[in-house]
Amino acid sequence: MADQSTPSEVINPEATASDTGDSGPGISRRKLLGTAGATGLVLGGAGTAAGYAAAPAQATPLTSLGSGRAMFHGKHQPGITEGLQARGHLVAFDLAAGAGRKEAAALLRRWSTTAERLMAGETAAHDDTAVARDAGPSSLTITFGFGNSFFARTGLDKQRPASLDPLPDFSSDHLDKTRSNGDLWVQIGADDALVAFHALRAVQKDAGGAARIRWQMNGFNRTPGATAHPMTARNLMGQLDGTRNPKPADSDFDKRIFVPASGSKDPAWMANGSYAVVRRIRMLLDDWEKLSLKAQEDVIGRRKSDGAPLSGGTETTAMDLEKADPKGNYVVPANAHARITRPDRNGGAAMLRRPFSYHDGFDTNGVPDAGLLFVCWQADPLRGFVPVQRKLDRGDALSTYIRHEASGLFAVPGGAVRGEYVGQRLLEG
Image (tube, rainbow, N blue to C red; front, side, top):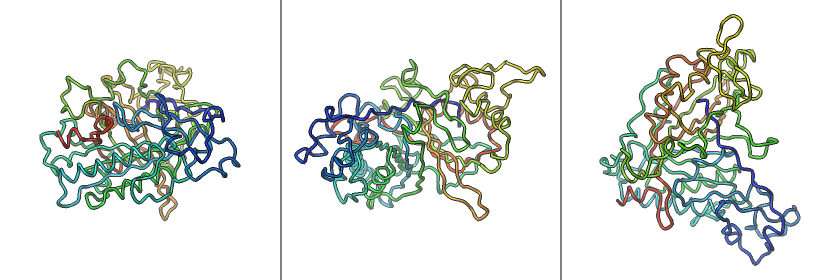
């Protein structure tokens, strides 16, 4: 859990009647949602419960939260640079016995068609479950990636990127292999739980006989708009989590997060893509919550209330690593998580963190199975995730209170242009 901030959440302003015009029975939901401009947002429709109840089932959503729309087609796949979403599902598939490149291509074609439709607020092309019938797109994103094992299964070994080599072992790993890796990976995020589940079910049904689910995990974040102003999210330890995240406005953002279109060691089909490291990190909350507030802050190196460094200032103030107290001790302890994960302490290593919290119930002793579905994005995991995790392995105060229980690394190709499906340049190249 590196000390890097999430991109600012965008809260869509609620539309008025003059924004949308007449949304009567003569205008379909597809037409309404298809008017999203370059911003990728559709601004909401009827402003009252009465107006919504009188509208047809496919009417524009009641509030701006449901109207948020991400674009399926683009330079990069959706679900990478968008702000944190309230609900998420991560799911990995293995190709079925006998399935190869042809079946994989057909599957990615189906998945891409489904993703494009659902992200536009439309129904699935076949056997729609109607779970999301009353909602708008709710900023739904669906992202697809390939695991290391995919390439041997499809006869594409020569196209497997070197960056997709298995991650090294770390001392904090307690990995369940049945919940790690996979041939294919899908990330689903939305600002509405039913919209997210609807997409998960559609993706599973589309897999048909070509692939079977290897593992699946459910996550959540704070709903956009729940706070007085956009702010860095909190994790289940109560800490602001993601203070130093790279931002799209940074001059070197693309270089750090996305594979360049030319001059890369990666194969051409990965142009404008990224690599996702996925880790299920269990938080030992009973032990954590026994610590005093000061002890918790010393573990992280930041104030719990506002995320400011212990050396002073606000959340965005640069951390003074040399500042000492009257006894000569570092104000930010030497093994504090925020100190160890700083990019300038790791050869400039940076990754875009886009996690979800999770809670999978309690054991028979009442111990919560809860923590973080850690997802981070980088142009090269050997220069992003790996050096930071190695540094944490050598002595991080937070390691006592967390356990890495599952892991995966996936190559996520660039976005699909219109008329193309995700991964087409790999599968038909």
